[in-house]
Image (cartoon, rainbow, N blue to C red; front, side):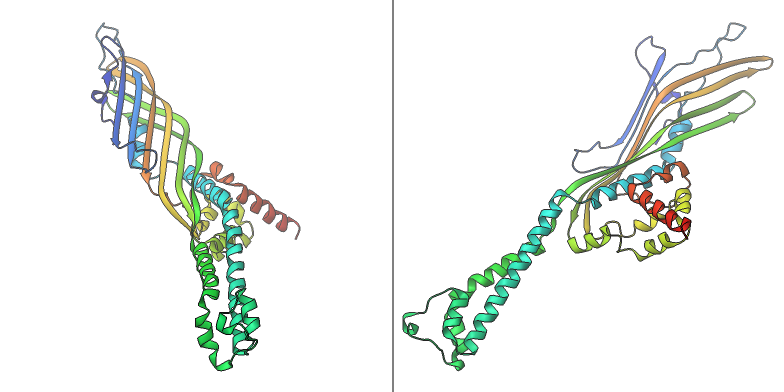
Length: 359
């Protein structure tokens, strides 16, 4: 995707000296389910250069071609921003959804219910096995049938038949255990989480031939957005990962002397952590979006014999690319972006540095 030449731009209006460009591929989406989408927008003046002999020089091609090509030709325009967006997304997920605490408390209640009801049924049947009919009734908080009204003790060999006969007494306990098990098996209600990162995005290109010399340059902030609907389906695994215990490779890396310096340069830690970042979670409707807005300047010099006519044209351009799925973080060379990935990383780096300096 990308403009090939100025003919893909149209005049803003009749008699206008400005051209506008707009290209969109894919659907913009419905704000719920992400879709693949590419877009380019540009607005710039048309260049008109008059030569010393009064003739008009050939119009220079519009700028922004190398800008859009560099953006869309790269699988990952801003690798540092991508890793930072991943880290922030994970930080938000690991800080815990509001429903997690409620779910854990509910799970504790459910476990307590299972334990109490199971213990109650155990004591009740044990009483029957020993012939203690009254203790059996007390455990289940029930009364005897009329034919057993005067029983204090029961025949030991009738324990099984009496247990079935008085099933109305222990069936509520079984139902409580079933309901508690259902509660324990339910996933924690999910939530929508997002993360973003920024990185300086700059380029300078130069082209030269026998007719003219061109140069194009820009500098801007590239932004990466990531998001997904995340559900905690295994609270225990989720808590283990939140405590940093689910990834032994990452633990080993953090224990290496000066490994945090390597992270500041190459960001190895985010790559290793990504192997287990979503342990205990189910990720739904994920997306990754790259966005940049820049003023692109093209310098152009018309050369014909001894005639040299310099010119400059510039205009704003916006580019965007969204893909379904989360772009996996890999080591990269975006040093300035890697230095400040997350609060967790900063805390780990300070801790490790303190250990090294105090040895």
